[in-house]
Structures are given as C-alpha cells and as structure tokens.
Length: 166
Image 1 (cartoon, one colour):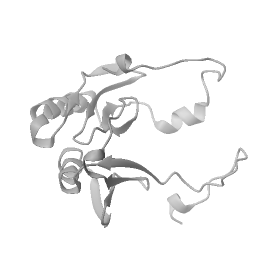
Image 2: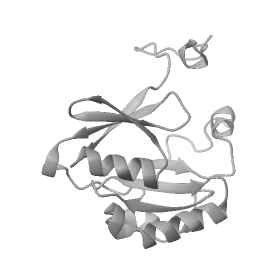
Image 3: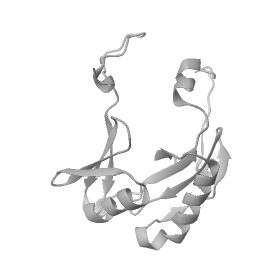
Image 4: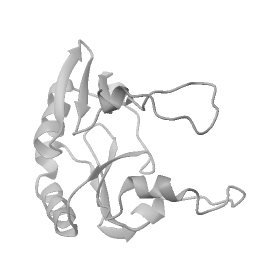
C-alpha cells in the first residue's frame, strides 16, 4: 500500500480525520521566472497543473502550489518560510555562496548570514516573489522530535523575532 495513503493510527481525537498533510501555497509574479528558480536553484521538481499555477515537490508526497497573481505579491515575513534540508554544514555554506553569487540571475532579494540556531546550521533568503526560504543542515531526524513529544510546556509564553533570523 502507498505509505502516503495509509491512514495513520489515531492517538488523539480531532474534528478532521486527516490522512496526511498534502500541500501548502505560495504566490508568485511570473510562473516561468519562478519555475526557473525552483528547478535550477532549489532543485525542486515542478509541474504546471493549471493555467495560473504549478506544483513543486522534493522526494515527498507533500507539495507546494505556486499561484501566479502578478505584481500583487505581498511582502513576506522571514518567520513565514519554506525549509530545504541539505546533507551537511559544508553544503549550507556552498548554497549560501551560490545564492550570493547568483543573486541577480535568480532575482534573489535578500540573503541573511549563516547561523547556528535551534540546533540547525542554516541561512534564510528571500526569493524573487518575496517568499522566504531556509537552507539548513538539521542533523536530527524530524521523527525524533515527534517521538520525544513536547519539551516545553504550553503555558510557557515565548515570542520569536526577525532579529533572531538575520
């Protein structure tokens, strides 16, 4: 059976009975320019599935839909970003150097410095459509976070800031 279609065991009750998290959406100005960035720079698989939109994915059942809205794209906050994991810290450094070198070619607007934060080695950058991306090396397996469960009680109030991501 396709793993993405298998219904996971329920351990909590919810209103919706989800099978899997399928997709998210981002906006773009120009499908052709954005596709070039997604394929050539980020290495994503892209398929145009509708007149105003295309799907992006990388080795998972989850995908992102890029919807073209022209020049009306709004500015995005760095804390609202898409993450791409790479195999090593050296790969993060290489990607940062390439983003800097190819900034004009791909219309990259901003590139933040590489930092160690929340256990990952990463940098953030803003693409030609104002979307933020994080290129990170995260040595921990994502399943480990969920297997461990909460490590901070929900009564703890904490607020993040742009400054912690620059």
